[in-house]
Image 1 (cartoon, helix red, strand yellow):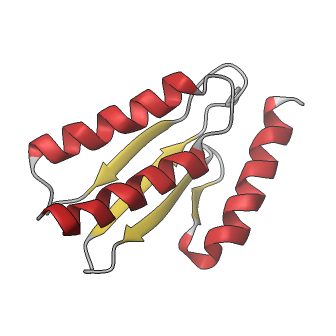
Image 2: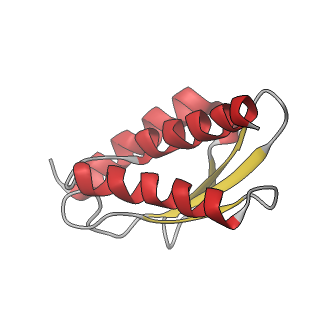
Length: 112
């Protein structure tokens, strides 16, 4: 399959799974966002921009905002997301990233 088809399939799946939480930010630059919240109310705003050739040749770029996290926690989360990207080159990874963030902030409650 080509990148456009893979992207369309992935976006459709994420829209089905996360419904109105998964939002189109800007169609022109193919940016999407989701707010991910753990059971204690801690929230992470996660935004991705999909290059035209994602996932076949390029990974998406991401930005997350979690003012309640320490710099070290943010670095750890970034490392986990980057590692997922490297381990899954050429594959759709947005769902995996969202699950990683969900797990990370849910485990934050347990640790802290």
